[in-house]
Amino acid sequence: MTARRPRPGNGGGLRPDAIGVGLARVAAAVLPPAWLFAAGRLGARAMLALAPEVRAALTENARHILGSDSTDDERLGLAREVLASFARFTLELVLAPRRLPTGPELFEAMRGREHWHRARAAGRGVIGITLHMGNYEAGPMLLTRLHRPVAIVYRRDPMDIFERVRSRQRRRCGIEEIPVEGVPSLQLGLRMLDVLRRDGTLLVAGDVGFDGEDAGAESAPRPFFDGWAPFMTWPARVARAARAPLLPCFIVREGNGDGDGYRLEIAPPIFPEDHDGDEQAMLDRLTAVFEQFVRRHPEQWLIIHRYWLDGAPPSAR
Image (cartoon, rainbow, N blue to C red; front, side, top):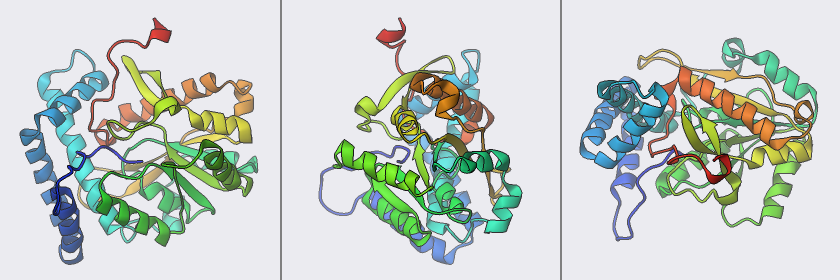
């Protein structure tokens, strides 16, 4: 699953998004990362100025995160930082895995390793659930250095060249891919349960990654900050069926400089038996963790479409 990019048109020829990723791959081979990140920040500023629909969506999201008493300048500042983080994420995907920490470095810097051990000790596999935050694609790559099998459940990105680059990086790290498009629900469920029965780690993003994503019955509105926003519901259903814990985990950037790295942060696991198998109670707990991390790292939440719903859903009125 990916954060939203403008959807490609139907015309022929090379698309600007494909050309951009292609140029980034060439530039990554010859230019220092610091130069690439500086160019990404400039591109983010240009996009904010030239794409009013993106600017409106990001500043509206910022209003929910920063609060109704935040100023226009504060909201615009957060919008700018989100786009800069998004540009950095895309560039780092091209540079990975050579910029990722080694296994020992990861384990030493990990926050919440006791939560990882507690979830793994159950012996029923783990459902790692995250947000489109920081460098969320690095998370699965890092986890393969601690444990295998690791599988990721995702929707293919609408940008074909980006999807090919991402899939290649995953395969190099030994990540199993489970795309959801065109797969019957029963077959999809069996594939996920197979990973858990092998005591593996199943990874998924819990937020709705791009505008227009066909999440359908798999997402539902949840209270989030001062409003209602959609989040995936099926991970709680799979956790209950497999008696496997949900493990909130996030790969967040440390510092603000070009040389900064990432840290894996893991929150306490959510065990189905602790909530009597109540999926809604599990989702309430999970959404609260999501809100906590977005409050701590708002500029690293890589959602660039309008995320909150208008008003409360009918069931909440």
